[in-house]
Image 1 (spheres, rainbow, N blue to C red):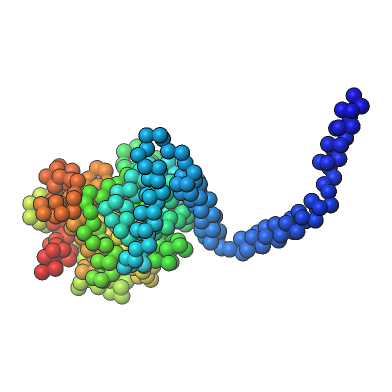
Image 2 (cartoon, rainbow, N blue to C red; image 1 turned 180 degrees about the horizontal axis):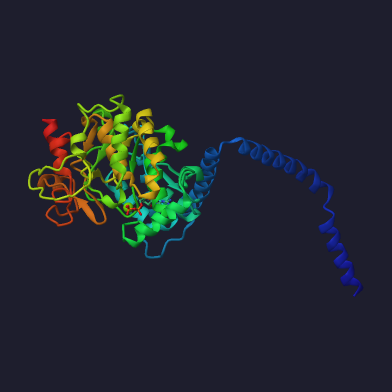
Length: 439
Ligand SMILES: Nc1nc2c(ncn2[C@@H]2O[C@H](COP(=O)(O)OP(=O)(O)O)[C@@H](O)[C@H]2O)c(=O)[nH]1
Ligand SMILES: [Mg+2]
């Protein structure tokens, strides 16, 4: 009994009273740690909201990069039937070597607005675009979300990217409903539209997304570092090897907006959009809109072009043609320009993004068709692309072979020459067919 209590008291004294050497060694460490933490906290608190998001997202991705890339490659035990124990190391070496290869690149980024639960679709889109295009160029990837990305999302997308990956939290004021929106009236409109079965009519978050994509994505601080963006959505596929770097095409040919598919919009989602646009055309009075060389004739009028027998009864001059913005390559300087901002502000003040669910597709398309010279818009003929429920596949047999396309141009889902498509109008009233222009 006595022995036990003596042992206990000895043990307690060791725990409670560290020796003087322990104190001498640990005190400077403690002071260093306190100073470091203090400096970190002070520096962090002086950052702007957006810089904080970048820093946090950077820290997270590096943390998980270490876990995934280093631990996976150096510490893992391979199954005994693996034919080559260095296989993972070699895969990493090949990738690092590719990364070091100097390739002429534009000041551009791949951009995905996405939700955490869409991770698997995001990875499929990334894998497809990396394999068909970006593995040679390593352009950055930027991911945006209205809620913080999960560590799993950051980890997986960072690993899938051949370039840098950045994960951004969108500030609430850039995402949520603006103050001019009357919440009671909005609720009334949502009820009416959802009862009428209008696509996404019931969804407030879809409205936020369209509003953000129309007027706010390009204002996110991280995009100030770039001139061009390539919009990517989860769950899409690129059917063919890219025969060129589309960013280089945009730059060298002075293009400001690029698309692959053009369709008709549902009129129930934009009943008053066109009258607001016409009002703006009057206000602008030729200041930024040059009718002599823009693509106004592409988005107005409904004459039959080729076999296009579509009958679209619209209540105004807008023929509902728009570029399908889930694929979009754009010059950010166009969206950041006063001309675009004024146009957007005029529309935003009308409340139609919320009361009617205006899409970013008709808004971008009308803006590009009015404000740009039609030759500044490009249709990428050679890119095969799928976003449910439609796709586009190059028609040239040679091109399908050379670019190793995995699509059937004769399929009923191949949209370019179907009734719903506006491509023929683009050929006639826009800037024509790419290959014809090249002759
Ligand atoms: N972060 C975030 N992204 C969204 C939200 N709603 C839609 N998106 C993204 O916006 C894009 C368009 O949405 P999607 O559901 O594909 O619409 P659809 O293509 O018009 O059917 C996709 O990249 C989505 O991941 C949202 O509430 N939050
Ligand atoms: Mg989509």
